[in-house]
Image 1: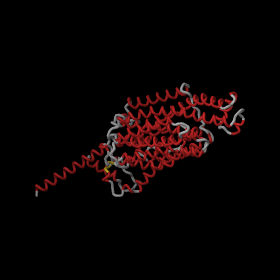
Image 2 (image 1 turned 45 degrees about the vertical axis):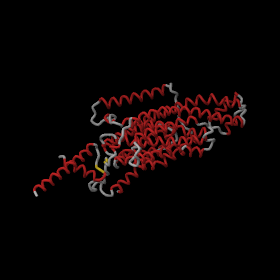
Image 3 (image 1 turned 90 degrees about the vertical axis):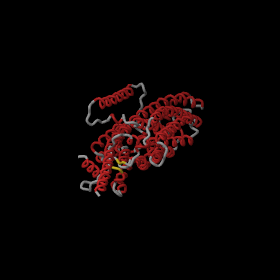
Image 4 (image 1 turned 30 degrees about the vertical axis):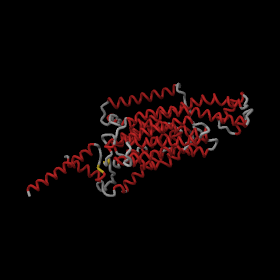
Length: 512
């Protein structure tokens, strides 16, 4: 009996040691609990379902269509995502997201009632900062589900954004058509352009030097995250892939209107939605196939889909004013691949980090990088387009209308009338204008715009090529696809102790 008792005590001691070792491993990586330890019904509880719905709706209202009109939205994301991620890691999530939603409401009220462009921009600035909470979905949904389910969790969240991300472009196109863009672009050599670029770059350098060299107790940007294997390649693939997407987000609505629209405002609004629908569809597909439902390595998925997306967007350069169906098909399929890549690399940024208590910081850094690099790319696209349009229209349109019979002395009046909207009243004041001249001028304008857009498609290949190179260095994460959960939901004050709190209390008691 003594031998059996001693044997039983040894087995119990070994089991307890293994359990403590397993708990130590979980705690060492910042996880709260294993999914098997969660109580029955946890995934169907009001707290979990309500939190998931709140994340989805927050993303939906954050996907503002006015992103097509101003760079202020992406700038706000670039600044705010890092702050929200890092500070909510330290102080908790709830009030950041409540405050962010309230800020967005205020910004929307200001923007919707604005009478001038500066007030509209001010309101949109608040909306952009508010959207940082909505775009933090990747770590909010990621930390409350097991690691292996983070991809599919994001896919579910993306479905909520389909109404705004998919169809917001129709509203935006209508807004542009009726009001005009209301901003001006400066050439590359203009001192204003150069000064903003130089000062912005120096501020970024100063920030990284400060975070690296100064001994900070709670750094805003923990540099050790960049040294984590796989984080930086995934972050760069995310950022550069988004830069490829923005070449279409900016160009396609304009291209649909100026090259293929023929005055059909409603049609332009509908086809402009192809970009938003495409990338959201790709995000849902990628999130579904990125999880445990496929054996295809995620690294090779990333390399394949971003390569196909870049190739197809580059092929947009072969489209002409006579190939609208081909252009619509290419842009839709290309943005599906770009969205697929994004839905893979963003969760990877949160999975590869060693301490899951820094998941918000990691996602914030990745999201800020995405918005910052995309803002630079968008600026490049916009300025290159403005420069090219300034070259192609003056060189092609006057020749075409003169050849069609318009007197050379009326060319300036004709182009001024077209630039002002081309209303019948304005065109009637142009001497020598005939239906033949109008038809020739319309064709010439389409070809001039198409030649300008081709340059943007070719520029996007450079960003896509860099994204492909970055994807090559993304590591295999199969061994990290565990059932560990980074955070459990807490009830209201006075509620029963949550499973996460029980786990940490037990861990502390076992390690006095």
